[in-house]
Image (cartoon, rainbow, N blue to C red; front, side, top):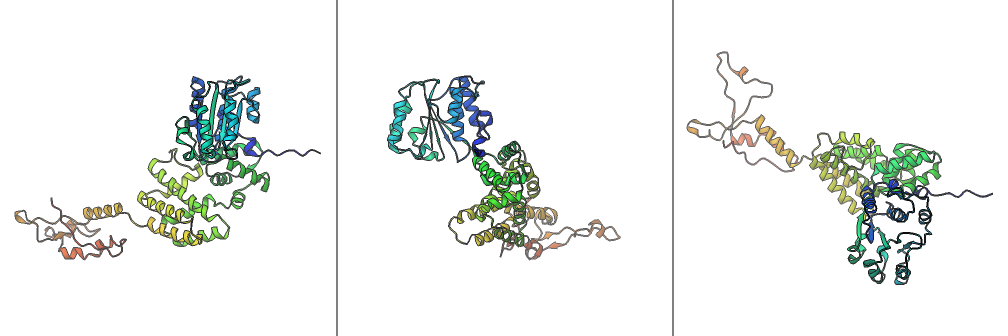
Length: 458
């Protein structure tokens, strides 16, 4: 009996055309325009983190260039050239894995093949993956064929570490920086694949997978594949959180809310819960920092911003959290979280560092900023303390300050039956300096007192 061969989801649903590529619209548009206008460069360099489509995009581009019956600029996927390139056995499209073939003798076949025209295609294309692994000698051997190739030769380089590619090579290529794929784009793609595979999965489970993938579609598909093997055709958020050690969306929102409210007990209880459940505590730091980064973007640009890496479900509670919140407080929390993430690389007691750092962040979140203090002082001066009175002849009266009537008391009602107005009480400078109400405004700054008050110089 023949056993059916399992095809991993990352391979089964690998994009075959430009339309299938997710999250790289800026690259796809340029490549399409290059093909339609006939302005195809001699070499291209794709740079970006793992699992975002560098090699896949290279193959699609190669198919589009050599397709025998293209649909506009899209490869048909049916001709011999398209099928051979997709299968990796095309004579005119050579792929080299530079991670394991990085010496001069490994690139020598490419140098020799450049001299021969393609057999059944328009171009002879060389795709070199992880090109940053090539030795300097190998790069130098490729330099001349790369700089002045025959008109039928095209090079496509892909790498995760663009800063390691020689500047002489980068300057001879069209460079494309591929982006990490947005969380909502990964969720949409996972939902599409789950429907195709007849898998029942909760939206929060899809979100947990997308968060864990950190912008990589291949990682997300591999995680979904693992969950299907673990749970079968019905997957809940708890399944995803348990397998990958992630923290639920609701729990992350509660922890962020506790930090913003200065709730020390809530913070410690949440950390205890995460640690007892075996959650990845080091990942918690990165997720919190990303959460507060989204709060900053939301506050500055609004809920329609494309810079937000959140889904619609995440957006509503975040809008409530920033309502009436000063931006300076969020910046302070972000600084503390970034410092914590840096320290986590070296510390042994991860939980203790996280607890102390989050408590410190909560103190920063509930401490008034200088801007808020100045606004409070201005409001107090305008609403409760009037300018010092002017004496006859234009001189100020003995350094005194007039006080408005107490709250709820009408100044006119304080007049006697005779109708004579009652003069407001005049405070001396020392009485004003000793006023506990004014000094309480600076209580947030330990040891601070009001040392001087200047009258209005109008």
